[in-house]
Length: 399
Image 1 (spheres, one colour):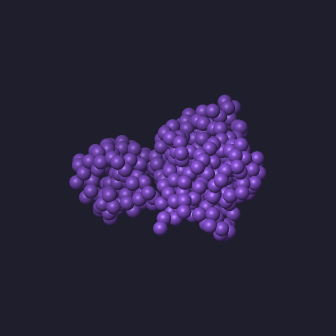
Image 2 (tube, rainbow, N blue to C red; image 1 turned 90 degrees about the vertical axis):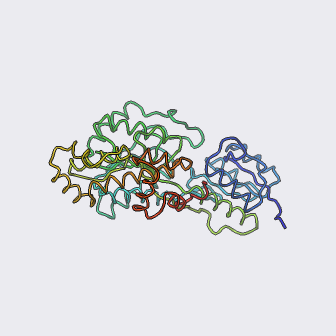
Image 3 (cartoon, rainbow, N blue to C red; image 1 turned 60 degrees about the vertical axis):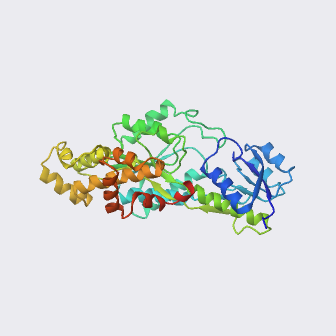
C-alpha cells in the first residue's frame, strides 16, 4: 500500500521553478522516492513567505532562514520546519548545513601535503561561517608550528538574498592595499580565500603584483559559488560541499519530524566531500626554481603530447642535473610525472563532463586514441575510466 502523501512547502528552494541547483533537485528527487511528498508551495525566502506559511494546511516545510526577522517568523510556524541555510549561526529551528570547520581544515591539509610552509589568507566580509573556515585553517597550521599572514578585505558584506557577480566590486583603495600585501608573500606560497565572490579580481591582482598562479602562488577557496567559477583564471581549486548528502539528511530529518519524532540535534552538519583540485594549486612547493618551472610546464602542457625532451629544451641546466633534481624533489621521473598529469586531466574531464566520449577525452589529454588512454589509465589508476568514474562520491546520483 502506498504511503499517505505528505504536503510540503518550500521557502527559498526553487524546486517548482525552471531554475534550480543540484541540492534543490536532489531534495525533490529523493523526497518523491522516500516520502511520497506533494510540494504545495515554492516561494522566495522573505518574511511574508514565512507568514503565509502559517496559513497553509501542510505537514512540513523546508526553508532558508537568512535574517533574524525570518527566524522569528519560522519559530511561529505550526508544522515541522527544517532550515537548509547557513547564513545565521543560530537559526532557531532544526537545521541541516555544511561543516565549515572541516572545510577550513581540509584546505590547510591540501597545502601541507604539497609541501607549502608560507601562507596567506584573505578574510572576506560575510557571515559567521567565514570566520569558522578561517579559524579551522589557522588552527590546522598552528598544530604544525606554522602561521599565516591575514588580509582583511574591507568592503560591504554580501547579502544572503541579494548578491550577484560584480554588484559588490573591490574598491580601488582595497585593490592597491591587497597588491602591496600580496607582494610580501615570498614564493612559493599558498593563499586561502575564505570565500570566492572576489576570487576573479583577487587572482588578477596577484598576477599584477608579479605572482604567477600556480608557479609562485597557489590559491584555494573554501567558499564555492558555481556562478563564480567560470570567471576564475586559472581554474580555482575549491572545497566541494556534499549537497547530495545534505539533501538526503534534510528529507530524512523532516520525515522524522512529521512522524512526531523529536530531532536528535538542532544543528546537523554535513562533512564536505573534500578539495577539488584545479589549475590554481596544480603544483607543489618547490624552492628549486628550475624544477618548479619544469613542473609548471608539464602541468600546463601534459595534454599537448609533450615528452621529456620538450621539458629539457626549456631548462637552463643540463639534462642530467634537471632529471636528478626533479626525481629528488617530486619522487618521480619526468616521464612518469607527464603520464600522471595526463591521467589527472582525464579524471577531471570524467567528473566535469561525464557525457563526453572517451575518444574525445583522449584527444584533449594527449593520447593518440581511446585504446591507449584505457591502457595508461588502468596502469595508473588500477581501474578503467568508466569504473573509476562510477567509484567517485555522488557519481551515481549524477548519472
